[in-house]
Image (cartoon, rainbow, N blue to C red; front, side, top):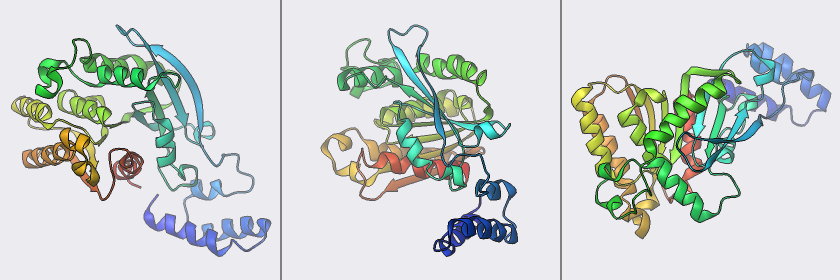
Length: 312
């Protein structure tokens, strides 16, 4: 939906807010028709509409990746119109099991104010404690130590290295499983990850970019390994086909932990490198969000990333 259509709907709703409920419904439908609004938008505001005002979490399951010693929780969110349509839907895969953040980012999707997406949240189950949550995500997201340089070298053997297998789990195990159950648009698959999930996003983008069509990469760290991976990619490939939203929070540069992790400099150096390469098929959006730190930037990065990549 275009920005103009959104503004028209907002104006009509506000202008009719003091009317009686029945009058609102009747007048709103008539005015929307007069403005030549799309039928699917008008239908949402029909008093007889069966489309709910919000999407729902349709399934929650635990799935064991090949070669893993633990289960990942997998939650699937379906947009409001899913059970009232036959179309396939763009799909956003979100790591760290952060479904609630994506649901917040999609506020208004049932009313046409945000794109309607199927969301697949993957990560540690909610009953895992903080230490175990961090242990599992570090292994899932980070490639072998030999690829990661000095910052990761001191980590114990087996603490990292799962990134190739985790990618295989998402793309070759989970995706076919869920595609057999849900109408996933396999030509519009997006990935979103923050911090370690952002690093995993860079790993996928610079090694197997065809795994997803769109990437929201929020606050990744430790720039040198990703620069090295990009150099190896560029040596053999002169194009990088993807739409990428790369971001960080401004306040991450002035925090002793996040600055030591080189988060803002990682976003800056990767943005510069990818821009200089001039990959013909790469669509890159870069944002440094004022005043936001490593935690407060998460919902903003996801909200803005979704709208940038799906055109809202």
